[in-house]
Structure formats: structure tokens, C-alpha cells
Length: 428
Ligand code: GDP
Ligand code: IMO
Ligand code: MG
Image 1 (cartoon, rainbow, N blue to C red):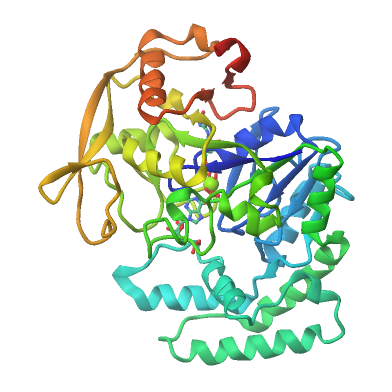
Image 2 (image 1 turned 90 degrees about the vertical axis):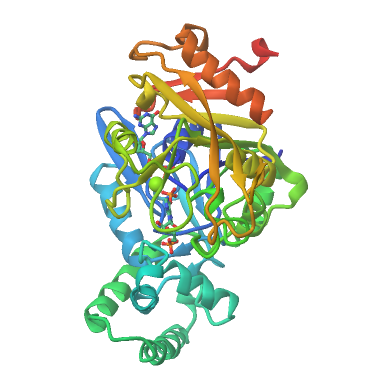
């Protein structure tokens, strides 16, 4: 069997949690392959809302195995909080949630370093979620990190002390910030008990054996392709490979085993944190998108920046990921817009281009917009693609044509069932 992939094609928060939760029913195993508690994946069903940060979004499906892969960075404190919440809801994750021994641990001092580095950058700050993501991946690539499997080693505490004192030394190089190490350290060590109760696996063997046995496996991305460390709007990115290639590194799966790549985009664009955003709206329309879309961060509560759909940007991330199917979420947010715009090209350096320039962070590109009529009606009660209002179908068709990728699902609300799924066989 091959491994299917779900990931975000924009700057995160595309609705990955909802789509993974919906599709999980068709899989045996869901695995996160990168990122950490900077992610906030929202699921809504049975009138309740859940936000997951480290735990894969398949956890609410009975009997389904969930794996936190080696490419993920794990903060035991936030993981414990998340698991306590699941327990309070009566979700039994025992023997259903596995963790890779090779996943790296976020220490309290990684968070302090994140905060100190951001404070020192001032107006140039990345707008990090301050969960310690950057410093933890720095220690991973710098070959200083501590991994989940290390917590069972006799010299674990020694390793911790050594890294922690290195961090305290580094913190002295920054303007001082406020922190309470002893308190946080106590919490961190106490949380390791929860981590010790999770079955630890060599996830590369585990996942390849599952695929060999014919198990259906889904890889769940975090963040979005425009936040990828290599291909995103550097330096305003996260510190992992959020694109399909990250699945190979983050789970130990060979490239030839990648199956369907399901790319998610909102029907418009959002971004949280700093950095370039060519189609951003700084006017009342942007505010309206934020209000109607409830565009506030699931992890930090920060207002998200909003703008129109950006086809050159999507074209770029579809190319990077090898997307085979598109999912369009939050189409309902546009229900009452008389006119909807879509960027088809950029004006840059006196010319028109459909490519993202290298120096996007230094120069401003001017999007060339195409206008679409809105449908001016609610989509409630619509359960099939064929029932969509004509203007809405035309909007989706234009996307498909310009992006040369089929739209196979359209999400019409946050709830699990508010999803139109194309009968792919009938469509071809
Ligand atoms: P993720 O990080 O990609 O999982 O996305 P988030 O959970 O951070 O943000 C997506 C937000 O949009 C959440 O509040 C979801 O409940 C909500 N959402 C997802 N799909 C839809 C949709 O089709 N329509 C509306 N109105 N909201 C949606
Ligand atoms: P999900 O999985 C949206 C953004 C931050 C910041 C930059 C770097 O919910 O889509 P970091 O904490 O990684 O140092 O932040 O990346 N960011 C996200 N934006 N959704 C996310 O995750 C994000 N994770 C990080 O806002 O701009
Ligand atoms: Mg999110």
C-alpha cells in the first residue's frame, strides 16, 4: 500500500483537522509527520469543538491507530494537557496512540529561547507561536537535541541538565525575559509520566510494516506549504518541511510509497504572524472575511490576516507537493459577497509573472485580479456538488482549470458532515 497525504497549501489553518477527521474513517492509521504544538487543528462534531495540537486528528475515530512521527517536536506539558482533555471526554487512546522514539523533545528553555529571540528581533519578528519550535529544530539539526526514546535512558536527567545549561548560557546573550524555570521544569518532568505511558516505536519500521500488511495510512500535515523552511516566505516560516517531502523524512517512508496527495486551500487566503502576503486586504473587505470566517488563531487566538485567493501561490504549492486532489474549505464564508476576486498573476518589476519571486520579502508584488460573481445565498442543506449555485460552481471550475487539479471535496461549514465529496468515478 501507499501512504496518502493531507496538507495545507497556504499559510496554515486551511481546515486540515476537519478533513483528516472526516477521512480518518477510511484509514487504519493517521500519522503526524512534522511540526509540533504550534499547530491548532479544529474538529467539530456532535455539537462539540476540539482543538488538537500534537495528537493526530484521527484520535476520535474508534479503533484507529494514531502515530506521532519522528519529524514532530513534542512538548510533554502540552501533550499531557491534550491527553487529559481527551480522557475527560471519555476517549480511550490507550494502545491507539503511538509515538516515535526519534521525535525530539521541546524543553521549557526552548520556549524561553523562542521568546527571547522574537523579543530581540523587535518589529522584524517572525510572529512565532512561541512554542519553542525553532530552537528545538535548531538543536535537532545542531545535533544537540533530546529525543523521546531518551527518556528511558539511565543518563536522561544528565542529558537534560547539560542541554538546559547550554540554553541558559544562550539566554544571557539576549535582552532579559521573564521566566520561571523551576516551576516549569517540575511540570515538565511530571508530564514525562504521561509520555512514558504511550507506546514508543521505531516509527519507520512500524509504518512500513503497516503499509506492507495492506493497512491504509494517512499522513497529516501541520502548518502550510508557504511556511515550509525551504520553500516558504523565508525567514517568515516555521522550522520544518511542511511539504510532501516532509512525509518521507518525518515518517521514514520512501518517496515511491507516496499515494494520493490531498492539498487543502481555503476559498480565500489567511495568514497569522508576520511576512509577505500578496493578496492581503487591509480594508473593510478583509475585516469582513475575518468576521465571517471567524479568523482567529486556534493556538494563539491572534486575529488572522485575510485576503483573496492567490492562484500563483497555489500553483507553486501544488507543484511542490505533487497534489493530486484539491479540497476547498470555508466556501460558505463567501456566501454573501456580491463579488469575489482571485489573483491570477502578479505585476512585478514592470512585468507580469505567475511565479513567486525570490525576494518576495523585500519587494511588493501587485496581484492582478479576476472578478467572479458571488452566489448570495446560504449553502446549508446542500449535500451534492450538483446542487451548488451556478456562480459557486463556476468559481470552483475556474480554480480547477487554472490550477489543473481536480477539486474533489468542498467544505461548507466547520462541522464534520458539512462536506461535499465528489463521486470521482462518476466525474471522470
Ligand atoms: P487547521 O489548522 O488547518 O486544522 O485549521 P484550524 O482549525 O486552525 O482553522 C480552521 C477553522 O475553520 C476552524 O475554526 C474550523 O472549525 C473552521 N472550518 C473548517 N472548515 C470550515 C468550513 O468549511 N466553513 C467554515 N465556516 N469554517 C470551517
Ligand atoms: P496549523 O497546523 C498558521 C506560523 C506562526 C508564525 C510562523 C512561525 O494550525 O495550520 P512557529 O511557532 O512555527 O515558530 O511560527 O508560522 N504558524 C502557523 N500559522 N497555522 C499553523 O499551524 C502555524 N504554525 C506556525 O504564526 O508566523
Ligand atoms: Mg490551525
